[in-house]
Length: 193
Image (cartoon, rainbow, N blue to C red; front, side):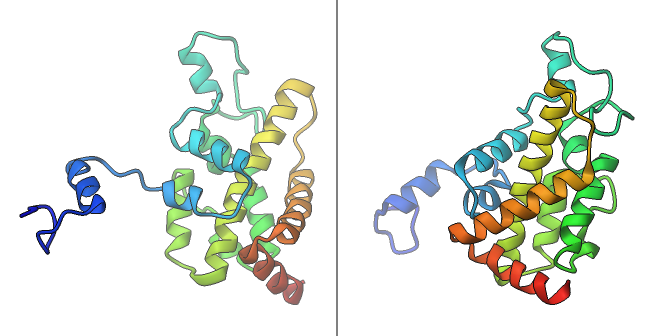
């Protein structure tokens, strides 16, 4: 008699669940890995969720030289959550991107972490809108990160409009590649604009 299943029968699933008793869960894994996005973008978000991206706070812990303030807003020390959601620059990007789909009311309003904001938005939408937004969160964070790196390593000036335009163009590519949720949002957005 197998004590870890209701039927008393052994299953691999019940054995795995028994091994996981007492383990802590990691909230955003499902939104990251089940969303439609290229692997490199998902991997970036996974490292951000684990606080492993090379922002100034992490570089400081390693004793390496780094910019004194966020390269996008030049106001406070850079952390992953600051860069992705709390920075004035990032908030403008998110508002502009969500405005394309008449969803600007979902833009970050307070100092939640990036993943808390993402999970909060997921409770307010469903279906293809949720699938599309999951892809947009991944693409938006990835694009902000790439723009940040261009500012740090190539010396470009931060540009909200450049980031929003890049996200818009990439969303069309993702739609052509098969992202149904993104295609749905783009169709809704064309009715709004």
